[in-house]
Image 1 (tube, rainbow, N blue to C red):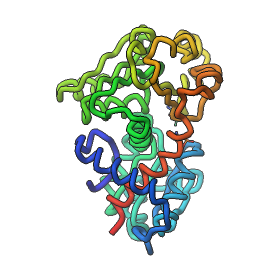
Image 2: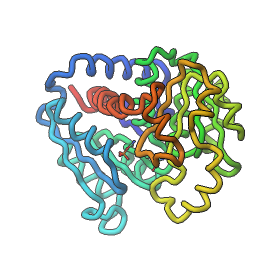
Image 3: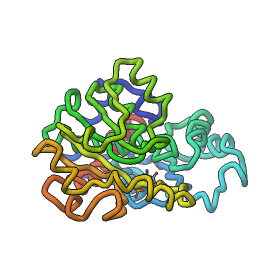
Length: 299
Ligand code: CP
Ligand code: NVA
C-alpha cells in the first residue's frame, strides 16, 4: 500500500488486516513511537471536526507531529499547482492527508507526492470513514463478510466507499434513495463485476427489512449547499426514524458518519436510542486511521 485513496485500491484481506490492527491499537491505547520524528501534513479544503481532530490526535499518539494546513493559505491550483505542492511537501513531511472537493485533487497530489497520501474525504469517496464504520460493525458483533447493510439517503461519498467495501468483503449492501441520487454508477458496476452483492433501490422499507446495519448521512453534503431546498424535498421520505427502524432486525445498529442534521435525515429518538452506535463510530475513526498510518508511514 503506497497511498490510501480508496478502499477499492486494497482487497478484503488487507482491509481486515488493517481493522485487526485498529482493534489492537484501540485495546492498548498507549503512547507509541511508530511515527517518531515524522510529520504528517493535514490539508483541508472543507470544514471538519472528526477528521481533523482524529488525525491530529492519532499522529500525536503514534509519536509524530501533525501539521494542519488550510487551503485558505496554500490555495491549491491557484497560488501554485497541485503537482508543485506535492513535490514541495514531500521534501518536508512523511505523509499527507487531504480533504478536498474534486477527487482528482487527491489523486493528482498522490501522483506528484513522494510520500504516502491519505484521502480524508473527496466529493467521490470517504474511505477512512468506512474503515471506522466497518470496525464499529465488527465490534458490535456483525460479520463483515455476511452482514446486510442498508444505506438510506444520498448515494454520496460515504455510500460510494461502502460500495467499495462491499466489493472487498462480500456483504450485502442495499441503498435506497430518490432517482438521480444513486451511488456512482461506475463504482457500482465495477464492484458488481467483481461479484459484489449490491442492490440500488427506491423504497426505504425494502432496504431496511432484515438489515443488520442501518446507515444514513446528511441530505446535503459539503459543497452542495445551493441544492439544499431541492434535496430536503427529495429526501424527506428517507428519514431514519423509529417507524423505519422497526422494520429492521431487532439487533440492528444505526450508524451515521456525522455531522448529523438531527430530525432531518435521522431523528433524535433514533440517534440517541439504544440501537445507535454513532459515537463509537466517531471514535473509531481515530483507531482505523492510526492503523492506516502505522501501515503506510510507520517503521
Ligand atoms: N465524519 C466526518 O468526516 O466528520 P468531519 O466532517 O467532522 O471530519
Ligand atoms: N457526505 C458528507 C460527509 C461528511 C463527513 C459530506 O461530504 O459533507
